[in-house]
Image (cartoon, rainbow, N blue to C red; front, side, top):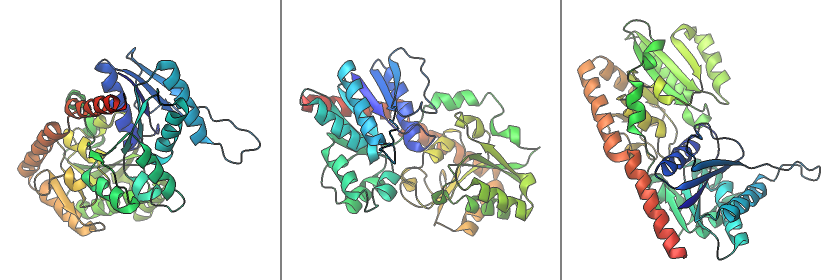
Length: 375
């Protein structure tokens, strides 16, 4: 098939999944065209069947704000027409789904089909904003097929937006071999000193991630166990978190590693992964940690209970329960054998339930159904 994929190019879950999907489809023999305003962080153009198309936004004095959604639709029309795409798979509803529907209508009946994947904040945050509600609903309802990354997100979409159409749940995925290869190196242990425990958190430092909760969990654990915290990523609240660490005089035990595209390199060898988010539509970072045999301490919100099995691959606690999450972390750090069992089971479930091969094939099956229906 000839497939277009449009996504945000950032390190957020939607961009990461879209990029990994594009590379997997190309590796399987499909012709794939990625469309975005910048090269996605994880995209590697090593396959001749994979190409990238940049959306260039015009800057005219008339426009106070650059019209990205129109520029995106125009680029979609161009790529779809010239390369004769069978379908366009867009990740994130606003504006990607709306732009894709507009592009499909411009191309006409002989054109491509639109598949939209919902990832979370496009529904729970942006889509729930009255300023975007009607537009988000339109993009979803006019798509030829819609998927959500978790059952929780599917329910939220139906309830919050009043959507009355089928939404198929296809979860995020991991490539097991990628995490296997990282085991030959030092991984996260390069940041540890001696036998100290190493806690890791990966974040875009937005308020919903509650990174201060991560630090406060660490502080409580560090009173009982020799521990170091590794914070990976960047974003708007990083300066606030760094200032808090300086005020508490614990910066020597908290490391800010910045962003990385090789997430496995900061997860393999860690003792625990912390994810105390206010909401998570799926929790890709948790799945990546599980793939590295790292138990997860997270909140029992959104799609996280669909990824982390409480008491088996990690622990789930209510949002804001810093004491409870610290106690859960300590229970595993004080019992290395139990922590090892949790890690082994985490890896087993990650591969059994969320392997790239199986999930990508589910997308390809959906594509075939949509193209057949449209033809």
